[in-house]
Length: 381
Length: 123
Image (tube, rainbow over all chains, first blue to last red; front, side, top):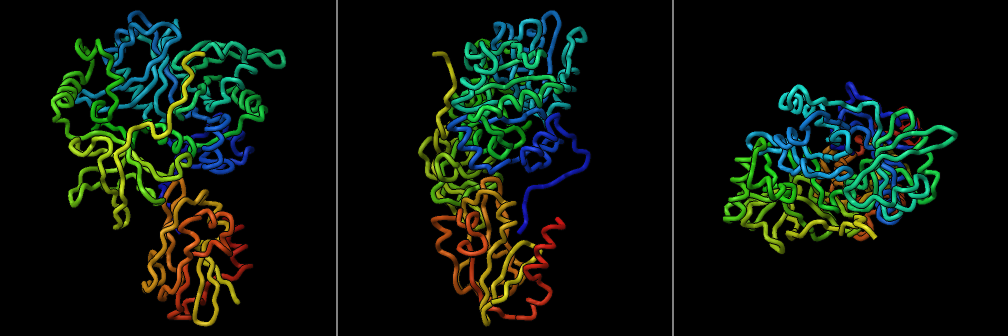
């Protein structure tokens, strides 16, 4: 028996909640340069708990950055295809840092907090992102890395009710909005920056908290019977069901936003006006998409049977290789394997019958709309 | 019926010149929720140390190597519909396959129950 997961245990950092995870029974694995909890009681149990109640994920490996300065929004817009200058205080937007050739350097969340812009970037990319931002932004824009803050994600249909009890007022947040809240316990007050967003497809929150208060907050959240800790394993199967790409797997510098089926992140006004790094390449891919000449596209695949097709599996139409799986696994909610793949655009239409090759076997697969499991974001009551 | 263990976390029950193979409780615990088991075809002749089966958990695919050489005579068809048997009953109902023992000297050097227990504790 051999686990194929590569294990590089050199120079791993620990999370602020490292001891807490171990006390909760987590199995820790290396991820994005950190020792992180992959699971507690089991991936499927945690996955299903997130879909039916609420789970607490520690995503403190992610980079929490802010930009401050006159024209910060305008300057950031030169590096990404989203509209940031018209983002109202308390609103957030999903966007992409792009290379000149239109390749994705990272995907990120940008929030207008009022006093500054807050960026949440991928853990494995954060140092390169900081270098990229610092290289391209003017010197009078201050970039701060909040590396002494933890980020806790509370996700699931009960997340709203749980958090409202602990931190009154959070129910006023709707999907993709954020605000500053105070949490007082034992006479001590902590400031929490709370966003109604996540990576599971469920309603939920991401809570930025100083590392000194993170353990208290985690304990207060799991003291509610509706909340259990969940690890990276469930986070991955949940985001796959939700059709959300994972950087380094479904996205990288050789992939443009149009091929990645992320054109929603290309704000309408900025498509025509441009003015950002990578615009020329992105505009060309948009024209390809309109003209039916796009080379390949990220699609969802629903597989027959029970055998999953993992990252790297070739995708075939008859005898012709037409694509490759970039994320794949078993969907606990659907009880069958699902995958994301990049497929020649000629074979990317919904309902197209394809095959994935796994260990010499051909597994029937159908191009399927994503999300595989419907999103249940809270857009207001 | 003697039971042997390998350092790859497989168990082998020997009965005459036939052996039944599965993975240990420790192995299933490490793998987590098992969603699919790919078993060899009956009649396949496999060599010790070569790929014999693949266990798919939610997280990853893991190879199971043949602990001894032989010809596959039977596979556990219950695992097709209920791969989670490997989690719930790894060392009994969740067995993988049976094979003929082509070279019983390959059993030498494998661990017994006590030896395996000590091995796992050392991990």
